[in-house]
Image (cartoon, rainbow, N blue to C red):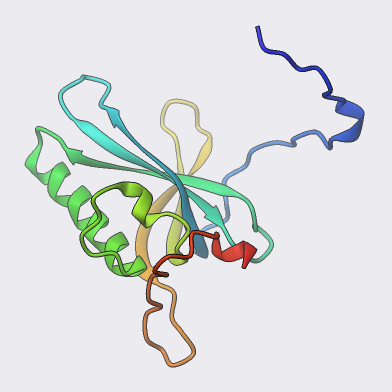
Length: 152
């Protein structure tokens, strides 16, 4: 059981349906990450939560999984390449923990695909790039400021 004392549904707008983001490029930040075991238990993947920072989809989320420890060498190579692209996009080249990648703006390319099991449209992250500065150079990662960029 969980104590919900003080919650009043009359004061909160209900959540509407969770539809996939339209395909395109989005300015996002990684707002959560977690290492999880694969379904078969023979490896692990890094699950990343991206939060959209601007536009009509501001506040919406999408996720990606990087199988960085996997028995299939090609799967692992692709995942590590994607992690390298993320690190370059946020300017953190040697993270010791995935939290070091959090709250730094980057651009992701999102595609839509149809799930084979349910026919539902879902998102798939297909690319990562740095948020360009006015001079066209990648933005450097903040040093000690842990305030999320959308709150600055």
